[in-house]
Structures are given as structure tokens and as C-alpha cells.
Amino acid sequence: MDQLTLDPARTALVLIDLQNSNVKRELAPHSAEKVVGNCVLLAQEMRERGALVVYVRVLVNELPALPADSPMRPPGAPAAPPDAAQLAPEAGVEAQDVVIVKRQWGAFYGTELDQLLRRRGIDTLVMGGIATNFGVESTARAAFDRNYKLVFAEDAMSSMEGEAHHFACGTIFPRMGRVRSTRTLIDALQAGTGAA
Picture: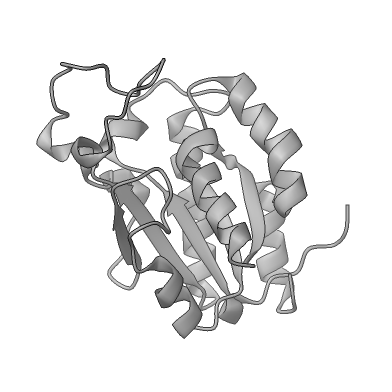
């Protein structure tokens, strides 16, 4: 594993779906409390270094309800409560952060995210959020297609099943970028600037 350095001026922390509907879920292998806590630590460190922090939330009642063998919301299920799509208070959003609203799993489709990042000269994304193999992976795949360098904060994301998280972090993400712990990423930020 090579040494990781991050240039805050060219790096954005992208936190996926830390909203009320997700932070109340039972997650594995990391609890929602641990994921949110690590995301907050990363966001604080990134802000202190002048890096961009992006929170993404999904309008859960506007997600497509296409035919599927195991749909996220079964046909006829009641709509999510009005606050389900709101970012959780414990997620620590601050006034200078960017909030992206999406209607799909991925944060690039139908949003201004790519344009916003490119206008700021961002070429590296640090990824975290809920859930690893849904919103995080979908966003990461789109970022990879757009040639962003990717870093995955393994313990700042989780899923509904530990096996799905481990598969993404052990098999998919290492082929797209670098998988590191929150502590390693904070150490890299504190060590100074450079190219990821």
C-alpha cells in the first residue's frame, strides 16, 4: 500500500445520504453512529485545511420505483415521512458546506455536482456515507467514469449487510481508488499537501 497524501485545494469530501431515513437503520459492519461520527471528523479536518465538504441527500419519495425482484420500497408501501430526506442533525452540516439533492442512487446523475467540482479545480474525492453498495458505490462509479481520483473512507461508510460492504471495499473500490481508514485520511491531511 502506497503512502497517501492529499492536497486540500484539489480534494472534496463527498458524504452520501447521511439523512434521517438512513442514520436510523441497522447497519453493518459499522453502526450508523460510528459512520456519522467518522464523517463528522473527516468534515471538520477537511474544513480546517480549506477543502470542500459536500453533503448529498436523496429525495426518497422521488426515487424511481421500477420493477425489481427486491425493490427498495415494495409496491403499495406508504411514502416515507417528510423528514426522511433531511440531513440528520448529527451529520454536522455547516453553512460553508455544499448540499446536493439527488433523485437516484448516484450523486452525479441529474445534479450540478460535476460542474461544481470542476469549477473549483477538484480532482480527488474522498467518499463516505450510507450505504456503501448503493449511494456511495453508484456515485464512485460515476466519478471514476469522469476521471476523478477516489479515496474511500472504509469506516466512514456502511451498509445494511456487512457482506455487501466488505465486497465493495475489498473487491470493487481498490480497483477504482484507495481504501483507507478515517484515521489514515486525517493523518494524510495533517501531514501536508501533495497529490493523492
